[in-house]
Image 1 (tube, rainbow, N blue to C red):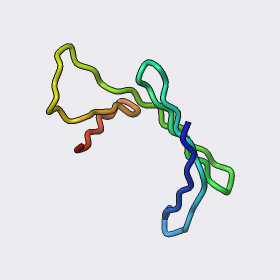
Image 2: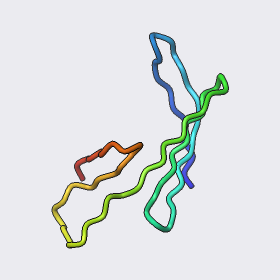
Image 3: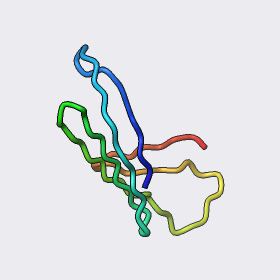
Length: 72
């Protein structure tokens, strides 16, 4: 498990909090964002797998049904 602090803007108001991310054995990850005002958001994600090996493929996560890709 990894713990972190964060800060940002929500509708022109500064917000901040802390959170954690936990990676599971099946490749899934849960990322928890907790606001200092008491709110909390959990983002569950699972790595999209392929039946063929691909060393130049872009890593992919599926979060709430949306596909997210990023460069290595």
